[in-house]
Length: 252
Image (cartoon, rainbow, N blue to C red; front, side, top):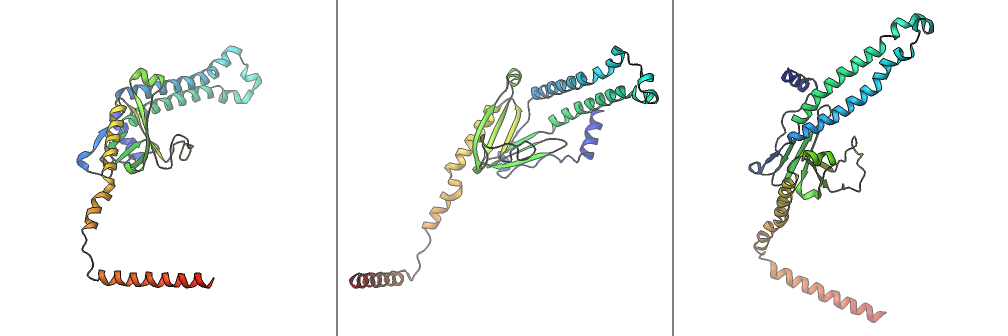
């Protein structure tokens, strides 16, 4: 049944297929997924929201019986319509929460974290899909954050800030998320991923981003055959400039 729901959501919500590896050597691609405990974390958050909804709606179900409203006397003709209204709202809210529970699992399954030797790509979201690709040359900061519940479950969030971003900037540029920040949410190997990105970033910087490879080729370019004539002309121009400067100084 869930498979049918997943296929239906993929078609209706137009969820993209699995992401392609970001720029870089495809043989170096590493795939990371959210840890199983992250699913438990999402279920816990879903349960809290469901309890909050129930805490708001249940009093509307109980209140008429507690205070014993005389619906016919107070509301007359509208009583038959208004009396079952709280029940309908409560049932609709519970159906919505069950639907949200299915989306929680789908959201967990559709998270992708890809890392190559030159870049990384993160995709998350179901209703609103967010996919970001970051080149290592633009990375400015890598940090790991972990709340109390995350520590209990042994998971953490890896945060990567790029040029123009950083913790000091406002994170409300796109639906509460910074356009310069990507996160590996709910991973149980955040330290390993950070070390991998750091090592590949260091290797990329040590290679000079390709500049050092180009320098030897520039030094071995053949000298033009007219170089002596050019040097002679430059010397004459320098001598004329020196003479002109002396003439100006003597005139002043």
